Length: 338
Image (cartoon, one colour):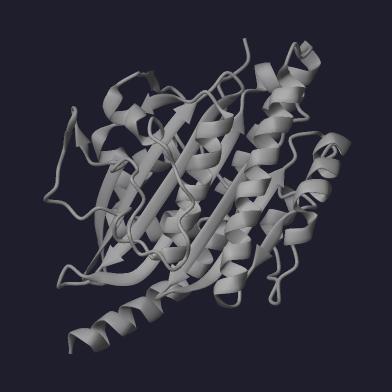
């Protein structure tokens, strides 16, 4: 029946998306904003961070009062389409609210426009619908600040219980230099159970090590939140790009899920503040800009070596759309240096 189909769908997709998380991982540029984006101050995009944001408790099923991302046509919101934010589970809802609260408080975000079909995308997987919604911003220090949400609906239009959250911040090489790492986190949740959760600060230096500034700040502000019952092994490709403070786990129970949400918020807050300290009055040398630029190029190239992301996207959205999505939105490298 419909229930059996929904269960089988979730089981198959959980296995496939476990691979996707390994491919995207924490700070992976999983569904990142494209490089040549259009500057915009459109209220429809700005609205996501123009109102107070709260951290939703895991027991609160009411969606936070945030922007209906990816559903704009001009300034109009289509209420006939399923909204990802209002259909994700408790953990993802709490995490996205926490991340947006930190971003609002710590950064002067300016929105970036996306093509309509990349801001919101719908595809079919095994007869069920996958919906992806993206929001992107920029700041003086970050060329891309990105939050991606995805969920699945069965044939009856009901939630299939499979949710994904991805967030990544790319620093500007010309403003931040090589010492500012890349923040990222990913969560995959299947029927209320978080199967994979990762948060990371990926170094951009030649040595691929976090600077003492970030390592000390992490240990002081976040070190007490990093112990979980079931840690997971970093995939081989990730060992070339993820930092030594990377936390990749399968949280056990509501307590550890809430702990992971808090950890992500604390790491993001620390990262924003340390970036502000580092970049204030700082002009990187040409050599430093080149080092930071090459660090991001290396990162994107390593991510592109894993074809699991492409295969999953092609299965949902087709080859042509996937090619465009990956070339303009997924693993875009920073603009070439003059």
